[in-house]
Length: 448
Ligand code: AVJ
Ligand code: FE
Image 1 (tube, rainbow, N blue to C red):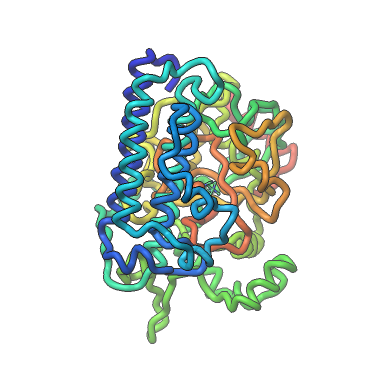
Image 2: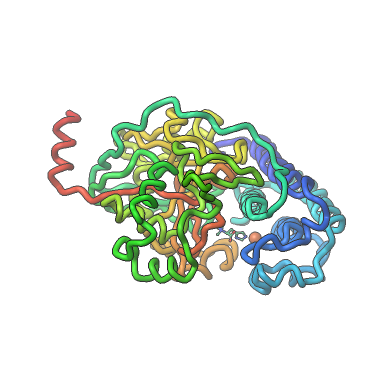
């Protein structure tokens, strides 16, 4: 969205808002009323809470703030304030029923179309480059991904459909590449729709390291299990082992083993044999950490991940995506719920980074070893509750987006975070490894 005319920008904002709404509708039309108000897991809100919360955020930012209009439903602000009620308590709130929620989001959106038509898309920081409209489209898509996770947790017959993810077209060899040491630009000060925690751009020195060219697959993870990975305390961090014990972890969430010892995976109401080529998904940070130790590796830091995803060795510039600055297309990455599963590793050669790292964007969120902290020069914008209140909490950063992440809410700078015990998100990981200065020199010589 750089250097668009105001009318092109307006059209693009309309496109991303409409796409988000079509997805919210699809995720809430395929189940009956009782399933919309039910709690499918104490970790999740009822779907009908997410839907009205989407409308309430849109009302707060676009109708009241940008539009300067009278409230549509000031009386429901409290119910849909995520900080007032934990997810587990939301089913007991006097929520709008499904018809009321649909009516509410439609009423808000109708006003927003008018406000979008009239906004100069410049001037106040929240309106500049259509930031508030883009923020609201990203917010809706983030809740759509959360609703997709709720669908994965619900029991009962499958209701969502999608074509299978593409098959691998190349072998992922070598297994890892060395990213040379040196500075790169992390974060952004120029991407108009980047959220506050992605800002500002700043220089970071990253020592040379090796990074796996692909996320860890189900097949590889199955080896870790077969080798006693869940029984060997020495592979786990102290906190990780305590959690493994108390939660009784023995395999990724949604894996099931049959009498013959073969693994199956339950996905959106369907049970299928485990696909060994697909990235493992629904593992917590502690499982990722234990696997990495078992493999003689470690998780990448957030800055390592971003350097691998953005740094262009030819120009020294940081780009928007591993493949360049071009918006993600179906050929680049598995995003946007086009498929209901991660693609096998090697399925997206067009999405590869200059250094040959595959599938950094899409498929599965990737756990990093970094805590969620502000960048130097961070300023909360436009509200403290998006990022700032989570800084320094018990959160690990995840990068890259999943098959359930819309392109508008995914880029090389995008930062997600969650508690290290969480598994209901579409999270996997890839491994990294330290390399000595010698590896770095060797690489320079072979390249010249
Ligand atoms: C950035 C995905 C952690 O879902 O809790 C939604 C996004 N913030 N509504 C979340 C968000 C406010 C957030 N994550
Ligand atoms: Fe929200």
